[in-house]
Length: 176
Image (cartoon, rainbow, N blue to C red; front, side, top):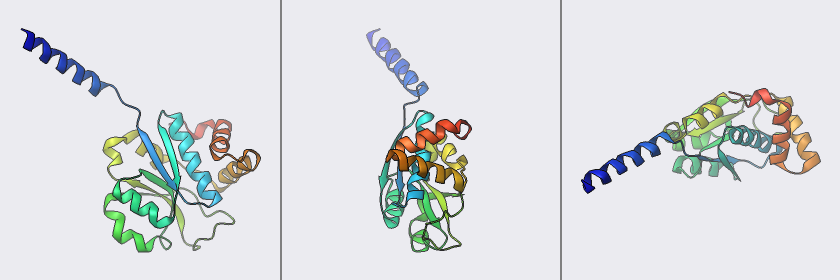
């Protein structure tokens, strides 16, 4: 009887664990350009609004590809394709998904004119955090949105606060 009770308790605890959805931490990578930081912190603010814990790391383009491929980060909304990242695509793309461009090139960004910033996601994120993947896939913005976030940053000198302030003014962006 005692063994049966232990098995019943184990089954109940496994069912409760399966029913509860733990908060998933999402790790975003970004470049150092102001528009890249604005895009990344906007994505961070939207994900946090949906209950995710998000960290942002500023790294070089090659490190973005390497860390995503190695599973040391989850996504980047700042990967420039097709030309700027051409050396990395063939080498690292087998474990990554391209969610496509989310906006057009902003003034002051020095990338090839035919390149656009794409959202690149670690492929295994689909099983680990499908809601986060869907948010990153669907997130869209216009160049003027990023300009407004950068203007907020000029006032606060804080990217998190700038993106959160902008999102509060444009609540429809975060609603899914």
